Amino acid sequence: MYENRFLIAAAVGLSLVCGALTAHSELKAGPVHIKPSLNVSSVYDDNVFLDVDNERDDYYYEILPQFEFWLPINSSCLNLNYAYQILRFQDFTNENDENHWLDFDGIIDLGRRFNLKISDHYRQQSDPVIIDITNRVTRKTNVADIRGIYDFNDKLAMLLGYNNTDYDYERPLIDRSQDEYLLDIYWRLWPQVSVTAGYVRGEIDIKDTSQDAAFNRYCVGVRGQISPKLRAEARFGTEQRDYEHPARENLQKLYLSGTGSYRVSDTMLIQLEAERGISEAASIEHNAYIYQGVQAGVEKWLTEKVKVNLWSRYHEADFELRVVTDSRGPRKDELWLLGADMSYHLKNFVSIDFGYESQINDSNFKEMDYERNTIKAAVNLLF
Image 1 (spheres, rainbow, N blue to C red):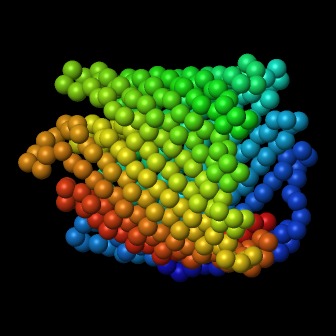
Image 2 (image 1 turned 45 degrees about the horizontal axis):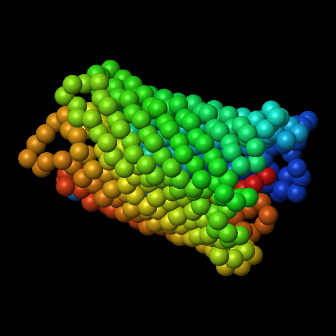
């Protein structure tokens, strides 16, 4: 415990000194721009392991240094962001962990109406927020994506893409890999609004099982700047998922994906997301689940220094397919989440955050029926 406090104090002290020395200078290494930052948080969690009956609470500390690098090249740009997360628990020290996050995004203008977008997002996490199970599970995910966009003329454009997502879990959860091949056609109705038609062919490899699957998804939609204050993108269609195992029932479900943001004023922004689809489960007890949900957020600057964020989320998971059956029937979960935080910007490079989040998972499976509340205080520094 005393080691944790020393680590926090040393990180805050060093960051304050470095921040004061570099706050008003731009860091560059040749043509590369560099933006380092540091977040130091103290969190109270009243249900660390998402227990149902015997809830266990604890305080933990998070130190999160980040480094962002970006390289502009004429009309192209490359961006790299690395974060190193240090978690230290006061009581459950066996949960202490270090995680790594890495994000790469590149937009390359190849001329002749052709653009290439490349991205790779890696996450190593040890928090308990997994749809399939409770308890804290270390997991790694990597999402690699490449897309080429060709403008035939001012009205018509085509996108070809490939996406690979790898899920690497601790046992007894099941690793899996998913490949997607994308084709989109865009037709510009107005200067900033387009209608789309798309097709996705996907293949899912569920490791060490005979549960592999392939799917086809057909969608239509619209995207763009609907008005000076409203920007939105929506897709809807159908997905057909076919399983390799003869005992698995194939699925055909409605697919929906939508995002929108409305700029109420210079100081207030409202955001909304909605989704519906099919996901494979990581738990051996379940094969797949149908999910649907909606989440909303409001960002409001009360003054030049004080900002408030409010957010909420509803997520429903219907586990229609099961390997292990019992008298409870198919499992169904409803997740409710509500949160708020306030940040006070002392200087251009220092802010203090206070936040609260409440999470309730209502399930017909008792081991998944839990509640969780967290309180967070943080200091953010941008050097």
